[in-house]
Length: 149
Image (cartoon, rainbow, N blue to C red; front, side, top):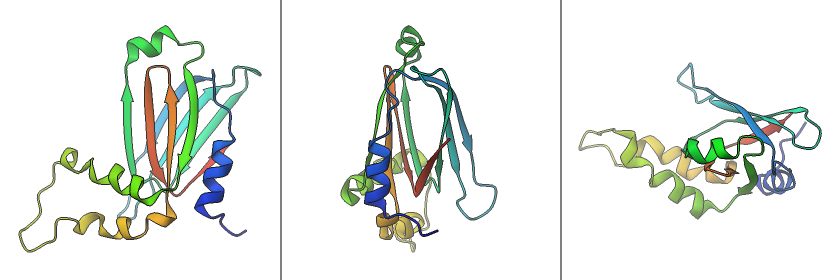
């Protein structure tokens, strides 16, 4: 099966409905080898059916997670506002580079500053910037794809 283009992936993701679903679990599966095989799982309880939805992001490159748990707790029964996906390469580039100070890395003077992320920055067309918005926070994930069960 041929992989869908990132605009198609974003369009499909933007049609998903997570509004008023309840976040049940957040799981990060970090890379266990030199290759980046990071996946992130978000499990929700669907507000309409009560069924469990498992949203998995594959080929994750960057993550930003901002959460106020007091606000989230006040909305525990329906804490998800919605979701969105974007394929704008400039937004993705900014998303990556603004995180750099938080990585706490130092490179030898002979190495260019962008050496560790140069490959990723040059292949941004393979990624999608996914956003899940909560009443109390936001999760932003730069990944190559997603799967919903």
